[in-house]
Length: 118
Image (cartoon, rainbow, N blue to C red):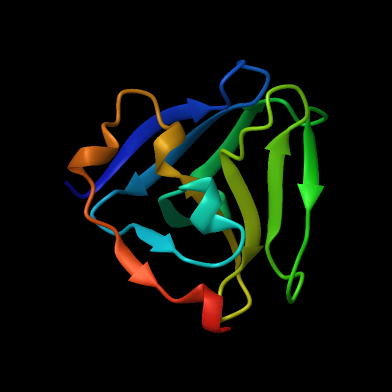
């Protein structure tokens, strides 16, 4: 697949973004947030992500170490992306691949991450 350009957002359309992402590299986490959410995340450098609409339409949720800023639409409740920091300190965006237009999640092969044990 390689890096491709995608558009995505929340269910109601209040949050919309564009992103250059490689969906060959996705993860499914079992932490107390991701497991019930059912998210499949791909991580991209912040420069590869553009929030097109919804800067003021999100609410932030922090838990555990507080390093990942989980942002969900204040209207429909969907978390289409989160902001965080890569191990090297650079800004990173965790994009919920289930929120990308035209992407069938059944075609993704996420690696399992054991966030529950962290």
